[in-house]
Length: 341
Image 1 (cartoon, rainbow, N blue to C red):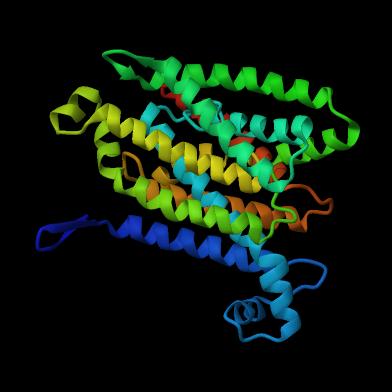
Image 2 (image 1 turned 180 degrees about the horizontal axis):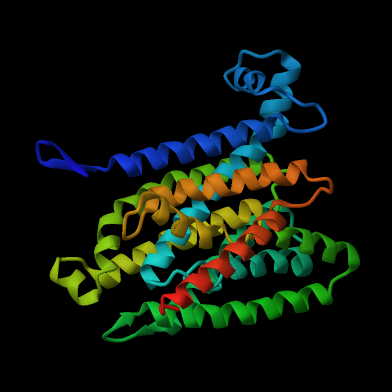
């Protein structure tokens, strides 16, 4: 590691982390190009690139920019958001299982969408708004219950209360589906799986705007987040306002997972796996926010590519669920052997 200085500004330069981030970005971008080129009318990668930069023929540009590029871009951005959100919550809770998948925020987002689909009958915009509102309200409830005067919010308590909230919301979601008409139940079940099928610019653009605000805000808090992993007392001794930082990070993390879920549905396990894989790739302790975000994109977009080339068409959430289940079993077995589970 080297420290680059320019006047009063200093920047840590870690060659391995930089190489990992570059590789992950290339993997995600390459998979996105292949996703855009996949379909009933295959398009070679060079033609995809030419169409994106406006140098292709009219037919190819229409297929690429109008029909397929929004799907790939939504996958990239949703993967970034989920990976970054997972890194935030795992660091705040100091627990590798402290993922928005498991502590109820993704489930709350799904509950908001289901209420709009099955009860109020809203359209795409209303479903998106309800999905975001569900995640925010769930986060507020979990944070309020986990908060204790004097000690604030502790990681273990946040995880336990979040898991309980997720279980209750899962029960509510199941009840809503059982009470729905067949057509509505099918639509809700498909949305709950997590899918990038049929995504257009109406999903990609709002997601991009949300990330343009939330990603810089989260990265700006990376240093106090890392100090917070030393423990509350040590962080306070270093001048970190622990509870305020934790609250701001929770807001950013909830916003990220809400935006991703509203755009792609509750895609499972990406937020859980990406931060741990990023730490192993960089071989650096602490919260690796940017590597985790890029790992999320490098997981979700290739998973979507796999779903496109399977003999039977299936949503990307099924692919990430299968891969993530295997990863979770491995994580639990390794942490159990180390005595840290």
